[in-house]
Amino acid sequence: MKIIAAHHVAYADNIRHPDLWIAYPFFTALIKKLYPLRETSILDWGGLYGHVTVLLRKAGFENVHNYLLHYPPPYDLFRESFQIETLLGKDPNHIDVASASYDIVISSGVLEHVREDGIGDDTLILKDIHRVLKPGGTLWIWYLPSKYSASEAVNRLTGRWHHTFLYTRQKITSLLEKNGFQTLFLARHGFLPGALKRLISPPISPATLFKMDYTLANLPILRAIAANFFIIAGKVGSDGRITPPLEKAS
Image 1 (cartoon, rainbow, N blue to C red):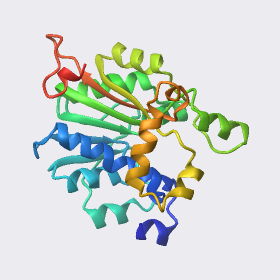
Image 2: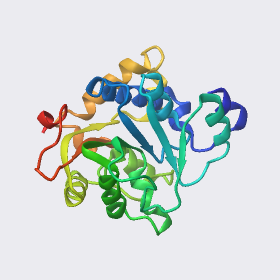
Image 3: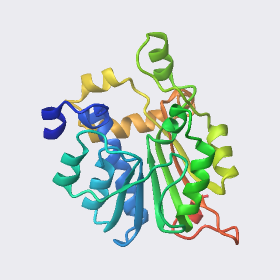
């Protein structure tokens, strides 16, 4: 937070605001619960300032890398301060690492931006993520914006920033299946407006507020207009199976 404040870091609202930030420790704690081994290999694909990578390292994982196509300013300050192990690539449709080298790949608010430069292709990159994962490995996706999100609709109508590319449940699950994944778990997150969450937190703690918001986002009558998808997808092996601990989640 000191680096963000001192250097007026761009695109850091998700770190600056506790109601957005709290999602990261929630999801990384879930990874730790399902993958307790310290040697689990994790690629934080497009991890921007490396905040998820840092949380995973603090959770005890020893083999975690932040993967970027370029260093966003002032990335070097984050990298040096938190000793973030970083890999650099060149092609938005290819991850420059060996095949079958990671147990987990994370897309934390990344997949929806792939096509924005007119070069990236979400189908091609998902195919390459499949290549990068070990047999039975998993792809974790969160902050994937929903086409029917109420907040996206409001932002469009009021001329505020909004995502260019949005997803439906059918679109993302079909895209995953097409590229060799099985959707093991799918939920929503992000229902209450950000302004309201910042108004009531405090006194409500960010952790409690996140749990409340997550519950609301997954109620049958509300989930259709929740902001984001949270997905765990498994790489299907040649035998059609996904290795534990996640195969039972399907």
